[in-house]
Image (cartoon, rainbow, N blue to C red; front, side):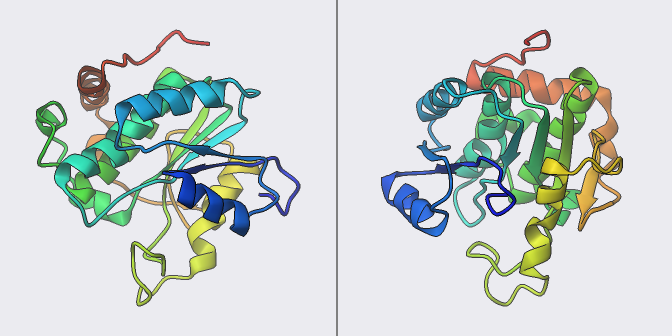
Length: 226
């Protein structure tokens, strides 16, 4: 995105990671700091985002895997929900999911309980959230993406997929004017629409997801926000 001349604001968990991000992407406009496992820091992060011009695109890329179920819930599910609710509505929203979401449990009781959420559950939640946004905010393009099993720090050097293709779809959905990219409520893998967990289309499940995330975070979904 930077190479294409777009203004890019990055996010980092702490000062050290922010400095690393600045070194790797020196042309980035800014790096905002906030620990996505901490609700207060998420609120501060949203305040800092809203102090800038309204973003055209927000890519929810952060995620954790080999950690406690409480942290998986906080970072992978509740943080993107909170930021979606608290940040001024952009034109496009992109949520990083995973092919593992198909093994996720569509029962949502564990969100309020605060534990027992698996990585697969959290990635199903991102498909459900994208579907709910697409239905409730028709002026926003909201989609979920499976980047593939790529050689990143989280997935390991042995991951078989192409690293370049791992971010290609997000880039395309963020800026393309191709009619295939200007859609909403879809699930993509390498720039192609893919099948997904059928329960993500269930409106009752979408509504329950939003209600339980709201209860868990004390942040209600802003249906009429603009």
